[in-house]
Amino acid sequence: MNRLSAFLISTWLGMQLTVGYVVTPVLFKSLDRILAGKLAGELFDLVAYLGLFAWTVAYFTIRTGAADYGFERRGNLPSGLSWMGGLIMLLGINQFAVTPVIKALKEGASTWLLDLVGGNFGMWHGVSSTIYLVCSLLGAGLCIYYLRLAASKPAYR
Image (spheres, rainbow, N blue to C red):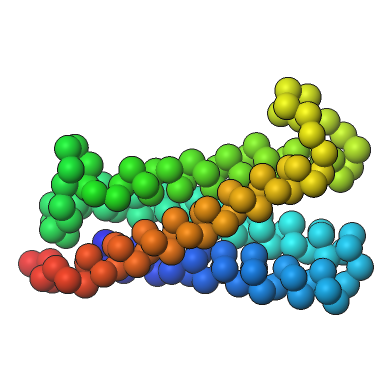
């Protein structure tokens, strides 16, 4: 994995954990709920877009240079790459499907997914929080896996 990919995914992981589990609780403890929710939403958008960018760069870096970096291959893909694709998919679902539903519920509007599935703010917030936790754990595992694997291999010649 090249240094840019490592830097991007490490930065995303730090932001993901900090925003989700440190900053947001402090915002809701310190500010009124509406302002805290607005600020937290902006921060979550920033983290989501960085995550989509960082993991997509890492995915293509590893996929195209797997043999050069000495990554073990299973079938046609380097090991762990399908997990990375799943992480990108979960980030996209949360950002482009679930988050618009939450924003629509706040504004009293509707979206296609809300019309299809229904539910209330609490249910959709729980879905989003669960996806966020899974992404955090999966991202941490993948980050550790690829950085350790890259560190254990000889330098590229």
